[in-house]
Length: 270
Image (cartoon, rainbow, N blue to C red; front, side, top):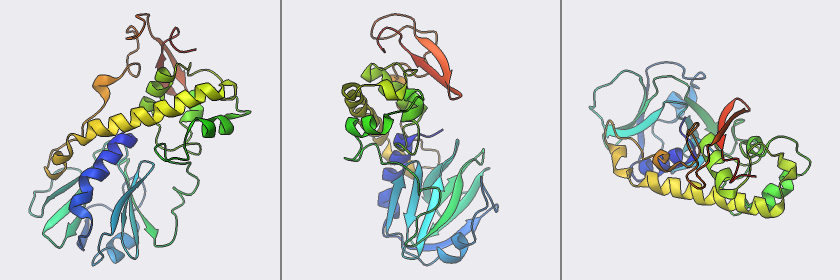
């Protein structure tokens, strides 16, 4: 599933091609994705100018004067800006055509993505209870320490709770905990302030670096089969079950935490 860096890379790639453009029309090739597509998408978007393209957690918002199209890529979704005469392929479910002749196309083979509507001046229910963005100033080690007091859940589960902080998915939680030297099974309420400081810094550094890595392929977002850059070739623990730690050489450990595969180093992470 695309994580925050991949979604932010998508946002940055689309931004120069969409911001300020007026929407000519909307074509829905099916009435639903993960959920039914609201009627407002077809009724209110045509004729509107795209004022901004924003990201909140793993959602993208196309802002217009009357409201925002709220997009989630799900497990397999992608967005591309294409020439208006580009042939339709399998799983091309939505086209948002622009007055300059191009279109924004949403392709989603598994249909776990979504296209919803947020009226102007309102916050969609999916966004209301979300925590802060991990790259915002309000998110740091002190914030994590305060929110963790009295919590018996594992620190990895705590870090992946979207009410605590958004967008730190399985990959980046595992990598951040390794960098901070924290065992992912440790109770969140028993991690010290100093160690949370290291964790907060690690989250910011790793997500920021992953976004930069994805940003090297921004040009691909205007081609039919372009794909964002990923961070996977630099992973230290995620997905490396049965391999040795790159830092100490010992065999990495594996467990399932909250039904998520978790790999860590028993020597480097305490």
